[in-house]
Amino acid sequence: MNVVVALDAGTTGVRAIAFGHDGLTVASAYREFPQHFPAPGWVEHDTDEIGEALDAVCAELAATLDGHRIAAIGITDQRETIVAWDRATGRPLHRAIVWQDRRTTETCERLEAEGALSEVRATTGLVLDPYFSGTKAAWLFTEGGVPMDRSVALGTIDSWVVWRLTDGAVHVTDVSNASRTMLLDIATGSWSAAMCELLGVPMHVLPEVVRSCGRVGLTSSSCPLGAGIPISGIAGDQQASLFGQACFAPGDTKVTYGTGAFVLMNVGEHIPPPVDGLLTTIAWSLPDRPMTYAYEGSVFVTGAAVQWLRDGLGIIGRSAEVNALAASVPDSGGVVLVPAFTGLGSPWWDPHARGAVLGITRGTTAAHLARATVESIALQTRDVVDAMSAGSGRAVASLRADGGGASDLVLQLQADQLGVPVQRPVVAETTALGAAYLAGLAEGMWDSPDDIVANWQCEHHAEPADDRTHIEVLHSRWLRAVARTRGTVD
Image 1: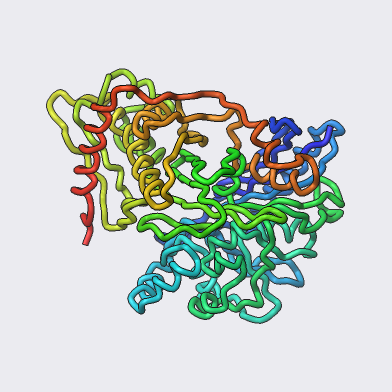
Image 2 (image 1 turned 45 degrees about the horizontal axis):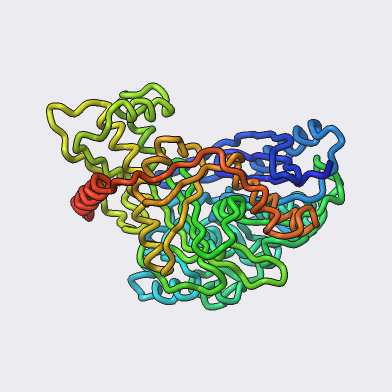
C-alpha cells in the first residue's frame, strides 16, 4: 500500500505519521526535545536537538512500515519560530528563537510609535508583535552575532526540515509559513522589500517561497526514511489543521483547543478587510488555483486555565478530571472566570488585561469554578467566531474542532454558545493529516480536495440547545466580566 508521511515539527516534539489513502493512520512515532529559557520571556530551541528528534522518528517509522511504499512527504511546523544556519556546513548559527519568545517587544513598540503599524497591517495582514518571525530574525543579526553575508540561510522550521532532509540542496518555505514572518506581501505571495528594509532583514538570506502543494525536492541518501522520496507539501500547523479538517469553502471554520485555542476561518480567494483583534493570513496555495486566505484568532488561555486549576489551586489531580467535575453541576452558579493570565487575545488583543473570577458567593464550590473555567473556553471562542462572521459577512454553519481540549463537554458548550453544530473528527491529528493531504495531492495519492472531503469522518457531533435564553444571559454576563479585566495593568 502507498502511504504519505507527515512530519510535524511542533513546539515540544517531532511527530512522524504515515497515512493511507483513506486518511487513517498506518503508523506513527514521536520524540520530544528540550525547551531552553535563557532569560525571562525568552524561549529557544537547539536546532540540532530538533534534527536529532526528526531523525529518530523517521527511523522508527521506517522500521514499522512493513513494506509500505512512501509516495510523498508533507511537512508542518511551529510557524513563527526562526533559525539561521551556515549554507556550507548546515550548522546552526544561533539557537532557534521560538514563537513564544518576547525579546523583541520593545522593537515592536518602537515601530508602532513611529507609525509603522498601518503599513505592516496592509502588507502582511499581521500586527506588530514579537510573536511573529520578522523582529526575531532582525535580532539575530543585531544582537545574536549572525552575519548578514550570503553564507547565511534563514528560515522558519519548515525550511530547516527541508534543508536537512535534502542535505542542503533545497532552501524553501511555503506561503502559509512565510505569511507569518511579517516579511511577506500576502497579496503577491512574495517577500516584501519594504518590510525587509523596515525590520532590517536582508532578502538574500531568505528561502524561496513556494506553493503549499507541489514537489520541492527529494530526500537525500542520509534520510532515515530513504532516498529519493518527494517532499511535496508544506504548511504551518494551524493552516495544515484547517486543510486536514477539509475546510475548503469560504466560511468553513475550525478551532484547535490546546494550551490556548486557534480559530481559523476560510475566507476564500480575496483578502478580506482587516478586523481589529484578528489576523489575516494565507491559508494555502494549490497548483493552478488562486491563494486561499483565512482569518485567524488566537485565544491565549484555554487548556492553561485547566492547568491552573490543577497546579495553582489543586482542585483537580489531572487535567482530564475537570470535565467530570464541571458536569457535576448544572451551571456555574453565577461564577465567571476570565482567564486573562497573560492578557486577552483575539478579538480583544489587550496585553494589559489580567484574569478575574467574579460572582463568588458562600455557596460557590470547586465544581462551580471548574464549570466556569470550561465555559470560558467556549465563550472566548464564540467571541472570535462572532468577530470573524462580522468581518467576512459569512455566518458559520458549523465548527470543526480538534486538539487535546476538544472534550464532549467543551463541544456541547461551544455548540450552545454558537448556536451551530460542533464536530470532532475520527482522526485527531488533523495538523499532520493536512500536511499529508497537501503532499499526496501533489503526487497523485488523492485526485482532488473532493477526495479529502469524502475521507472526513465525524467521531462526535454536538447539537446546540433549542432554548437560548440562558445561553445569551451567560454570554452577556461574560462580556461584562471581560470589560472589568481590560487595562488592569498600566
